[in-house]
Length: 201
Image 1 (tube, rainbow, N blue to C red):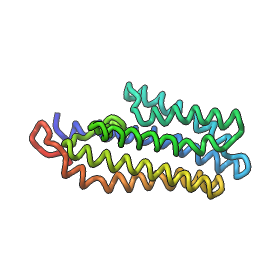
Image 2 (cartoon, one colour):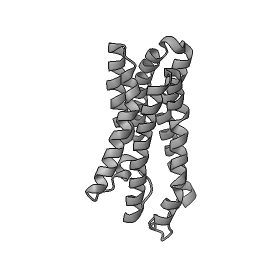
Image 3 (cartoon, helix red, strand yellow):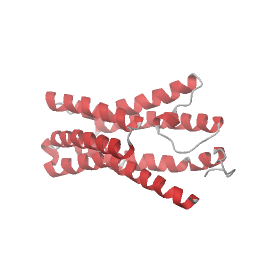
């Protein structure tokens, strides 16, 4: 099998992962928009919980495993979504991004403190880096998760719910994409050689 043939299922796999992970967020935004400003967050939260379960089930069906990051995020969505609906309090679902991002930031920075860069585990990474590359990339992502947690706190505490929902979908995701894109040079510099002797990236 040629290198081109081998790359096709990898690209398809990545696209499936992207759709599975972003689908529930899109549904959350759409349902909130349909139901309006007064009560939109509660049906949107219920829809997010259902979509999250479906996304995890599809991920398991297609890939026969559950990546760590979507799994942890999904568990927090279900717990805090249930608290939001049962107690009719928006606070819980609004805290979810803060808690998840703080958790991942703590795990990554904490792992570095013990000499264990855990980014490859958290992100289910498909690339290989040398030790220095993993250390630098893990530090950057750990700090970025803390920044996202701080931004979430600023937005939900100071702006209306609809603004927070919009920021969650159209603010956090583009910021994350741009940050990931900015890490490409580091990944290329520290990529290890493949079995064929060619440097990845």
